[in-house]
Image 1: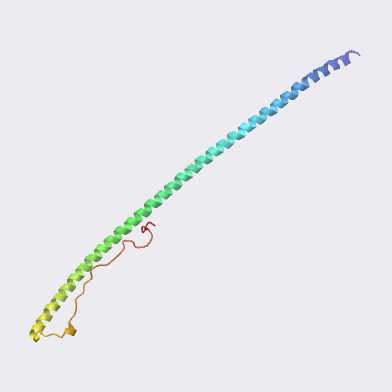
Image 2 (image 1 turned 180 degrees about the horizontal axis):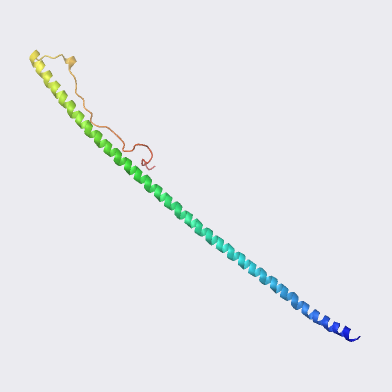
Length: 155
């Protein structure tokens, strides 16, 4: 009967020696697990930030592309409007010149016929019936159909 208590006393001694090493190994495992989880969380955060940065850069690039396309379209539209307005203006000028030439010819003919009638009637025309010939010296027109796209004066 003396042997069983002896065994239990050596086993108890072994348990008391093993308990501190088990506690330290558990603490070490917990610390390493915490370190691994922090490292994993940091890696996930870094990957998400990297992906978010790429997406943001892609969106900025696409936005800049649309802004430049809009500006090019606007510039092209304004230029086209100016060219169209200039062409219309040139056509109107040609028509006006033709009309003015016809009017001048008609007035010249009327003037010539009035001179002939005055010479036939004795040359004395009533001063109240004389007419004065006035001609247009110019018109002002803008090449812009709408106010959108017109350049602004600096302040």
